[in-house]
Amino acid sequence: MKKMKVIILLICAITVAKKSNAQSAFNIDATQSYTSFKYMDTQGAVLNSEYSGLFTGSYGISYRYTADFGLIIRPGLAMRNAGASLVYDDMNYSWKLQYADARLGLGYVYKIKRINPYLIASGYYSKLLRGTQVLNNEDFNITESGLLNNSDYGVLISPGIDFAFSDYVTGYIELNYLMGLCNIEKDEGQTAKNYAYGATIGVSFTISKK
Image 1: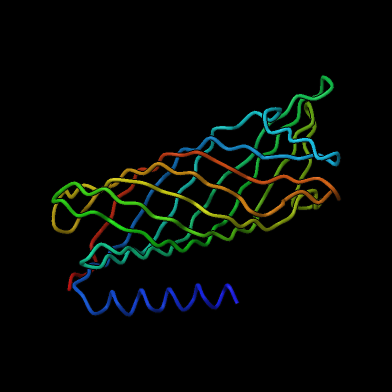
Image 2: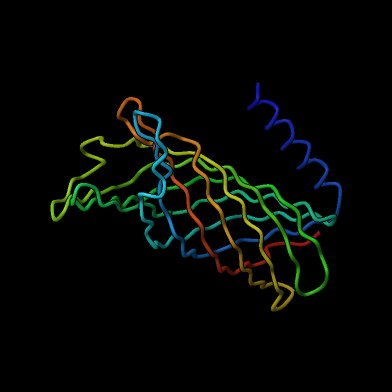
C-alpha cells in the first residue's frame, strides 16, 4: 500500500511538472564520504562509538527534471563505497564494501538567478558488488562467504547549490547524509546499518528546455 502511494505521488508530480515550463539535464558527479556502521549487539547495547569510520569515494550519473516552479525529479545510478573499522580485544577489524545504487530523488530548488539553493531527498536500493573483511592481516571475501547481506536500502538527504556557467552547463555542490534502513548483519540478534556523511561536486549538462 505504501509503495502504491509513492507511485501515485510520483505520477502526480510528473503530470504537474509537464504542464509547466521545465528543464531536463544529465548529471555527472563525484562524492567524498565518511562512512561507518550503526551497530547493536545481541544484548541490545548500541556500540556506534566503537566503530571508526572510513573515508571513501563514490561517483554517479543522474537525470534531472526541473519544473519552472522549482520541483526537482532526479533518478540516477551510483557506485558507492562504504565500510568501517573496529579494534576489539586487541584485534583489528575493517570492512570495505562496494555497492551499486539505484536512486530516485524528489526536491525543490529556489531559483534566484545564477546561483540557486536546493534540497533533494532520495530513496536508494543497493546491491553489494564486492566486500572484504580484514582481521589483522587476513582478508575474507564477504561476497563469497555471505558474511553480510547483499542488499541495502535507505534514504539520502542532499542540500546543495547549483551555479550556472552558461545556459547549458551548470556546476553544483552538495552535502549529503546517507541513512541505511536495512540490517546488513546476518548474525541473529545483531543489527548493523550503513550511514555516511559526504560532500559532492558535479556538472550538469542541459538536454532541453521547454
